[in-house]
Image (cartoon, rainbow, N blue to C red; front, side, top):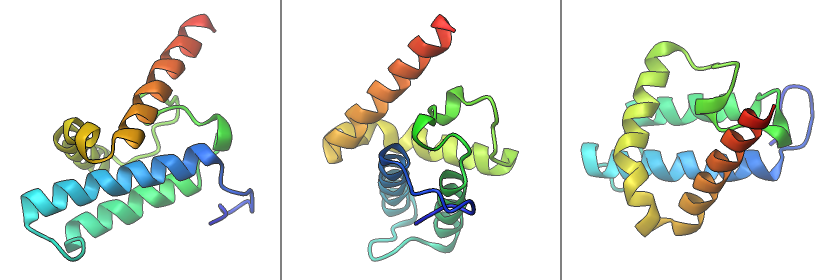
Length: 117
């Protein structure tokens, strides 16, 4: 899906969308016992996170959200996604190892770039 400026989605954004999707699904299944689809609260968070990723002004150069200078999440949504990530993050290495490793690499690379600048 393209963003509002019709810029094609970067590989980085596609990967982050997959990662947050899997994390929210793990959280929702375990905490809300939603096995078929996401509950309404988790669907709202999922859609919100996807909109932020789609409209990210950094595109292919997107930093990990925790290192981003913009912080585009509303405080309530930021709190909710932190809760999801804190719960699902450790489980990702076993359930979705590629996505977990890529997220860790991107996080480490982003911190290295930030320190150098």
